[in-house]
Amino acid sequence: MKRIRNTSINNFDNKSLNEIRSIVISYKQSQNLSPKTFDVYKRVFKEFDIYFDKNLNLYELKMRKASQFIEYLLKDKVYYLDRFHNTGRVRGIKPTTVNTYLKACKSIYQVLVDLEYIESNPFKKIKTVKRQEERIKTIPEDDINKLIDSLDKNYYTDFRMIVIIHVLLDTFGRINEVLNMKVEDIDFETNTIYFGETKSNQYRYVPFSNKTKKLLIELIEETKEFRSDYIFLTQYGTVMTPNNFRSALNRYLKQFKISTHITPHMFRHTASTLFLKNGGSINVLQKILGHKKITTTEIYTHLSIEDVLNQSEEYSPLNSIVNTRKYNKLRNKRRK
Image (cartoon, rainbow, N blue to C red; front, side, top):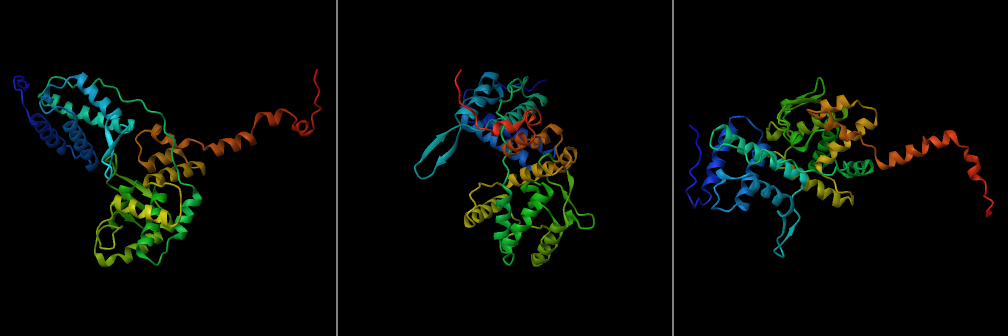
């Protein structure tokens, strides 16, 4: 017998939303999903609460309303609020984020279908939002060198930043993966690090250099007094968070007058791009990055505009065909 909801109730006061949230979260917890995935579900339920009328029974949501919700996220969602002037800037969410939300919406309603609370998934036939291919943003090598050279190893916080940057560039890791590293995750015999908490929820082993090895050993020795399993700690012995890192990084960029806007993920982009540029194999890079599909890794095969211009000039077909000496002669300006 199917558990189809009663349609005669008029005022739900978000009762349907609360029920659906409880059903889905409970069901998903049994699937051992990553904390990041659960965070997406929570944000989607929050958007449901903001957008949908409290009198609307969300068990009876139709495709038209579901499509309007996705359209709202893309075009009308206020994602920035000026605290001082109490004004909002309506620009909508990025297509990539909207697609992440859409995937979560499909999953949420599929749970209700599977458990026979509803008969069909209103989000099932909604297509993902097309997005323009974004150019991979990397960090200029001069800025990385300036940042590292400006940090003072005699100060713990500066030294910690040096070690994190080395690990990020050496392992191609995401900031969450790096900051969640424990001492037991490092094999100093084989120079490999175990990343257990990953975006794809699949563990992987990544190599690191002897230079990074030396820095890690020194940092672990320095933080022994905290008796923590984790590598990267605050001055108070607590585990460093991605927000801690971003705040420290922005402070250093401002202090050292580095104008490039640098985010933690740009270290991963930079390392991947340089790896291929220096002759590394894209298949090896796929393994290091933990990508399931090679097409995801292929975004790093792009060439910079500078590379294109330099090679276009150097290897131009015209240079091997046309005698360029005649272009150096002054032209007799005659009209026919």
